[in-house]
Length: 206
Length: 201
Ligand SMILES: [Fe+2]
Ligand SMILES: [Fe+2]
Image 1 (cartoon, rainbow over the protein chains, first blue to last red):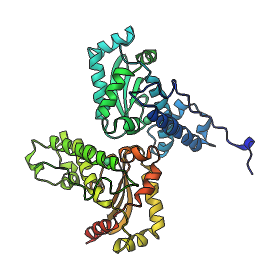
Image 2 (image 1 turned 60 degrees about the vertical axis):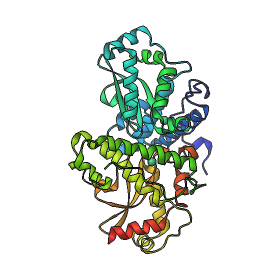
Image 3 (image 1 turned 180 degrees about the vertical axis):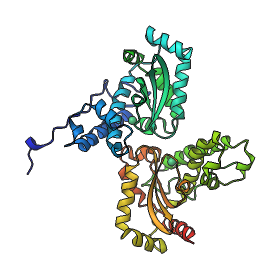
Image 4 (image 1 turned 45 degrees about the horizontal axis):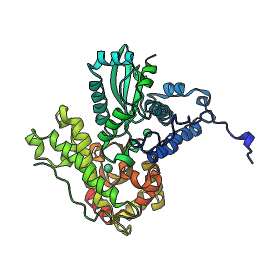
């Protein structure tokens, strides 16, 4: 009979949400965050811990698990769960209560250098979010010294293309279906206008 | 000819409590309609493509002009898959006829088929479909991502299950396995049998 002492110690824990689950309402409801964080994000953590238990991956930090499994079809399940853990943590930090507005000066300058205006940058983010067919993510990234908008499918991450993520928007249907149903554009625009955390994006500029 | 939304062969609440009326209505009038609208927009200047059925369009994607191929694959696929899906749903239809015999012959037992189909539908990562198809007179279970259709793979679908989150999120949220289990209560086996007979004859 197994005892607690013999139980596998999971190397990965679910990071706590950086705000209460009603902090993003009404743009993202507490109901949505409850499922999204409490079931989906937690599910990826639980899955990964089961998948890597007793393997060489068990002792690796999350970004290393992601980079070691990316693009390897036989490691797809580990990659998918690991990347989804990372993506969701990054997404929570990309949002905040009373977000939106103007980016800090240095980021704003770089955005204007790449897109002309902040508005053009937001439009491109919304277009990428709409163009992602099926499940995935829209990202603002640093590629070399240029800021770009990219989209990724399912669990894919920009790091595998050598890009540094600055912020992300989850466009899996579970991110908005309880609040917006099929109206993805309404969700994306509300997130960009009212929740997006430009300070977090500026910190990621490094 | 532009494509139009087919009517459902039942009321939106006909599949309650397994699939709720609100999900059915949004799925049909918003999601399915959007695939049709986007497909029609893509072929609006292509007279020869307008003569073709949606199944013909997606059967030979290589022959679709490159600039609209992805739209036809995604939105033509979405139109074809949803048009195929709706008539597959009906409560209280027993499994009988040649399809029942074929399932036993090819999977050993109905329970084994059900397990394998459930596993395939559960494993789809992201958005997609699980299918029972006929290929060379043999039944097989296939999964496709997004709105890809078995027709694009040269296989003939006889049963399909939409596992995009929009198909179940309002009622089941993250619990896709519960939705898959519920689906087995609303399979219109008469329709599946018809599809099977058409595929093998
Ligand atoms: Fe998500
Ligand atoms: Fe669907």
